[in-house]
Image: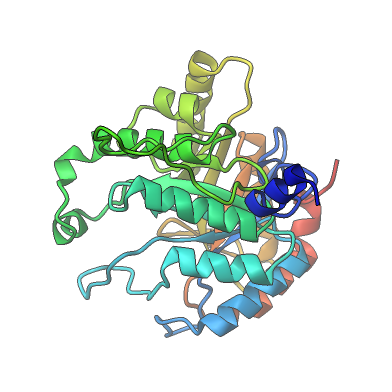
Length: 329
């Protein structure tokens, strides 16, 4: 075998999917739908992750566009959200090996509490295992006591976020390079292998303490929590203005994480709940149409513990809601 072929085989992973995965999730004028893991039945706070993998495979087959994985380092009885999460890199690796088409998105890796080179290594690993289906969502964490538990300074998170972002971006980009924390005399030049099938795209999840102009310059888009429609529309207008200032003429995505309690009555009207709605499928479709009209490109549905089994919910949505939004071309 020629030396060039040996090098290509040993350093670069398998061929990627035919289009950049971010274009399947975020497209101008379209809205796609994803799911946040874990999806739990009522009363369960620690997931059976074998069942989560099975649900992920089912979502892949049903045509959902993305699976979102949270980074929750620690749990506390004082937290309102008691769900037990796997380490995100472990779960993302399992998802990469057990799905074929759906995008895998970290929503979000806590950039300020992990070393950026560890994050970069995890990102290129998932990108390789998934054959180019990974989007690296990055956040700063929103629980100050966790900073103290990790010996980090919460007051420094804004600068830390920017500095770590630069290191990660350099390592997972098309011209990958390692920015070391320190470079003593005689230190070797480092690299990260294997090279992924394509560079890893970086997505801002939340603001990370940064301005929207900074996010528009550095990220493929901005993912936020759901807000009531007027507030969300104002937020989107602010985002579009920032994109025009910071990246004129370029596409930058806008997405939202939406909590959904899907009623078994398809005609039930939408009722606001924390960070989302309880609604029947007809009202949900109407809400999604309005979000699309206002410029939202992706919605990640968070299905909290509810009386309806998650499999039943995602099957109903796949049959009656997804076809309207997941048109090709």
